[in-house]
Image (cartoon, rainbow, N blue to C red; front, side):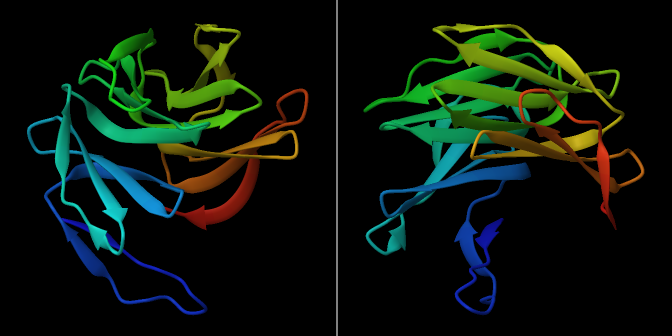
Amino acid sequence: MGGRWTWQGTWSDWKSLGGIIQGGLAAVYVNGEYHVFGISPSGQLSQNTWRNGSWLGWESLGGTVAGTPAVTYHDGQYDVFARSPRGVVYQKTWRGTWSDWKSIGGIVDGGLGAVHANGEHHVFGISPSGQLSQNTWRNGSWLGWESLGGTVAGTPAVTYHDGQYDVFARSPGGTVYQKTWQGTWSDWKHIGGTLG
């Protein structure tokens, strides 16, 4: 069952969005609307949208996907990234209507993180050997997956600001680490905590 927790000076109680979702969720807030994405029990990408004060309900966007999806928004376009049960990463794009799924290659485990900045998509996942991997879309094409090292698990999270990318991921033991790009990638830095 999906739910949300809202902070406006203090945290609200949980409120149900309905639906049955497996794995993690991805969300984006644009133009006064929330768009939340997850994987249904049948393995299809599902979306729930909050518009004009209410949730519209879960709708299937198709596919056979697994793990935690990632979503980005820029210039009127939504891009959702998800992996197949075998680990191949796919992209689905909305510009008025949803595109078909398109493969961007690779084999990853777990969920995905993604960000759009400076006209580029950056998608992060974890390789079968446990290393953080990145695929970048630049000048109209995907550059291919490259290893950024480490031994990580689960779903990476990524942010961008002022020319800097930060990726957060946990070790198989649950310790949280950060890796930063400012022209080149830093080493992994331990930021504490233990997460399951």
